[in-house]
Image (cartoon, rainbow, N blue to C red; front, side):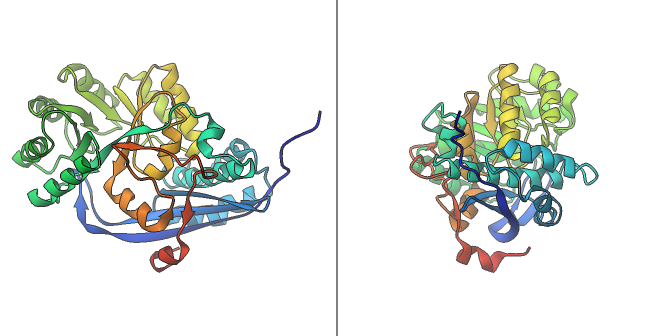
Length: 368
């Protein structure tokens, strides 16, 4: 039987890092920041070039260029899963979590993008498209925001047709309740209101706040306690208000992390971040576990990447439209995802992810 696949090897892999200041200082319950770093990878083969991106420390770009790229150059450009396995082996002594996981994630997404381009397909079609678009929720509402800034951001999402919004809590004391009350006042009674504590509360604090937030119709409580505290998450989930989903998973670096969280009964919705859990390959593995556990999933940040993945995943219920990344992707990427009538859709007229780095715009921000 004739092999109909194009014969292509990966000829070159190159990573870079770009640091862009935020539009104003930002913070959540546990961390403050004033810039965001995008990691990019270009993978060349068969006369085409694939593109992947993510968000991590610049060290991820160094790890790709010095450790992973030499090991994967010459690999089959149509077998990203095999390259993923090779990359994981190469990280044995460097560590699979954290920077290692981020490096593999960006690299894997670039290789999947290259494969789709070589086959002449949008990535979502290659993976098996199950829906045309996915519900988006607006995400921001940082604890550093004053009332005017919070109102302006919420009103902007409402104008885009977004019917669910998420704000940060954990800034301390009565301010958390004030923020939630303001958000509910701005969006009205119908849209869903989510809160994200980034793991700042103790279990008892989280339960207390959960019932106070419920008075304002909050339907999603993200990381009420640390994601490492699976028992604490389970307690909040079982004893919190009816109708309030407990969500976590953005720090799942591997399939094992996802499995542990699901087996612990720690969440109502599993969050998956393809820029951390192993790229497209890791995302597909995590989505399969969610299917096995009958667990809905939602994506964390990077909307221009996750639009395609959500639309190829039956368990996905919505995608995070995170302020920092929406802004940064619009600045640096041609083809960046944009909400229309409250939904995100991959561009099925473009090959792969349909994304291209705006090199001239990105270069002033390059740090690695």
